[in-house]
Length: 169
Image (cartoon, rainbow, N blue to C red; front, side, top):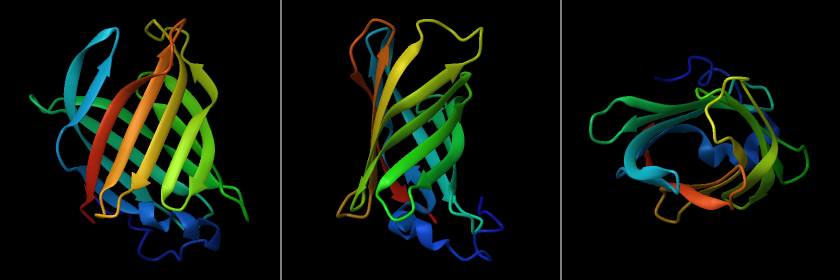
């Protein structure tokens, strides 16, 4: 689904360094998820990065179980870049009730982000996520790769998700 404003709005110059993210990306092969407290799983995901001319990128991530196609994890939010710099912030709301701000650096066509702030609904499922680290990288073959690591209460930061996407529009 294309954003109706994307075609008509000129990209804000602040976002030029992130223009490689814009568009719709779909998992090339099912991604792999694992964590110490859950069985390993495979998933497909669609990412949609758009803009409306403001100095912010809008995004929506939708994951589906690779076997039964049922909806899984959802995230939506905004990406901001520090004007004149390489600091980037992801402001994210998740369907699990978690809201987070991840901040990090843009180096070429790689984003490396870490938890800056977390908040959750009062009835969020335990154990609670305490830290998230995320790396997006546009590979030389034109595919987008994402690795997400996570730490739960009292545990170390561990890889949770790994997936590769191809641009579909």
